[in-house]
Length: 303
Image (cartoon, rainbow, N blue to C red; front, side, top):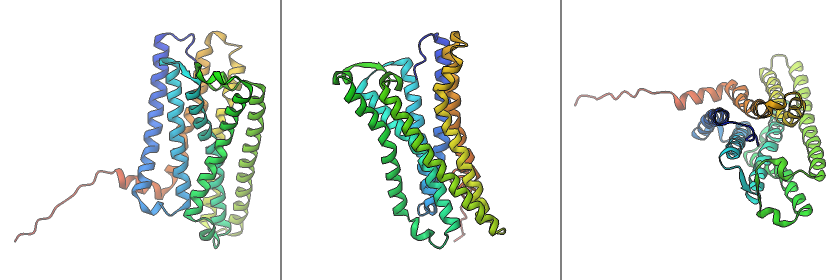
């Protein structure tokens, strides 16, 4: 994100402190969840928690890259294009991974509730890790396509040049715009279809089995996946909000871009672990167990 032009030292310092602080808080909270997962073997054989912790780790990587790029635009704005492309590929992949992972989690809950007898055979640990590899492969395609378009439409010497590492500064051809529209429509359509289908099926199951608390819990869980997805989709509004607001307040361009970035990219990742992870009593119990202060009493028997 390039907002350095027009910022005085105090504004630039304040923005960087806010972004780095929030990024640290997000990574710290998610780090607690990751440590809890790996310290408790009860989670290691449950596809639900494996997919969730993958979502958490993916968000940690995305926030780290996003905050790093933000700070770089101020302290070291010009980056080699090759290095920038590598960073953008990873950043784009992690961004695409989030909705795909949410869809996978919704499908897992659907199978657990609507096909409970088949769940142990379908949702194995091995298949869960294969699914995670597939999510990364599918999420990697858009970033790779962007680089291929650059290679096909620009001289290769561009990779030896230095630019401000912002996606619009490299991927700015008509082909990139068309590719982005197609990819967004395909990805979001597939994810929303999966969420809506699983929610309706679980809702019908919950109505049939009015005493089945697991079905009702899965219904609310999938609904939360939808809320998470809406929060993640806020990042797509950043250029739209910039385009609408900046012409009306051109003197405050950098402030508008900063607050849009904060609202659509940082805040949703701060709410994400709280929305899902902290409502899971099993996870919360183990978080408290891992990080609570324990008093050890040693009793000495007289000889």
